[in-house]
Length: 458
Ligand code: BES
Ligand code: ZN
Image 1: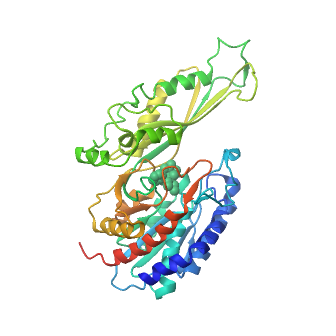
Image 2: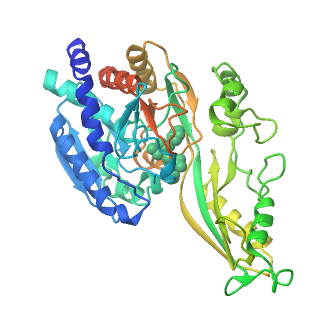
Image 3: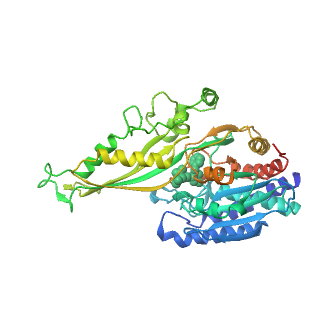
């Protein structure tokens, strides 16, 4: 292992230069005008996988963006890791809030700023470099590894479940490794054992055939912006509880032991408010901030659009109003069940004065694993060696839809070892990756393969 770690230390600067090349590709899966960029990014990843020494590298087409696959299967008798990550990124708007261009990776104060630096290109690259270090130094890996990168994670992994079902035979492994999450805090590495699920909707209301003069028509015609606000106001009560009937029916209650364990995590509410500019916290009563984001479901308005929003004042009664609404789910809520409950509720609270259109968008199931399995223990040892500190065990509020599919379709446990940080600005302007976490992450990943190689039968 020493040789491998030396190699990683010597190549520190090269890794950053190469990663900048990956971060320069605007692979925004949500925006049609970036289709070619997403494909170019898949090509880049394929070429890089060949460069690091992976074999059988190919782009496998799906009805959406290709899955980039490569493997190294020369460790006879050793376990097989299925590594999953994504090469697509979120849109960059509002662009004017970026301090450096989102696709020109820039180093400031030990952080690498670029869209995708943390979520997830930097973390994918970290594993490719760990693989490279083994292969270049030893000519082999201690484990078998199948690398699978998708280009549609940020838009809900729509085609990935079918892909996995179709390629079941080729994706056999012992464990899935994913680095697409964050450490609990700076200096506090972590292993994540739970993710929330998601259902996402767009609601469109129409109150008239065209915008109307608000003096001539106001008071006689329903205003869809107002109606939408009233409908949204009926979705949650003032105590933060979602009012959709049946919404909480399948929520698995938090266990006392888990609540207890979380109270010993170094979470500082004052600092949290200050870091994120929050005047006062809000959430479901009876739960702490960590419990609210990790173990309780929620309903959020992601965006609203209606009427005149320019400078100055324009008197108008808007014809339409639109809201993007999502629900984060926890075990054992099912996205299809919740979607049906949401549609029925929205329909029931919409007045006859507007035309209502409810469109379901992407989503995914929640996931939770036990963390006493041997692979998680192996990851704990690797992280301790790479970061000089034992990891804490966390759940996360975000979603990675495919994790539950790996469990259900392939029967595989997942180990989520992320090196992002809570203030990494994922999905927001000025996304960044801490360079020393990236570097230690490469070392920890290289050690992780070694540790997994030593994991025996249960
Ligand atoms: N990397 C995130 C998921 C994540 C965020 C995990 C925070 C752990 C902590 C991922 O790329 C992501 O943003 N996923 C989407 C999924 C959605 C589009 C189905 C999300 O959570 O919004
Ligand atoms: Zn991600």
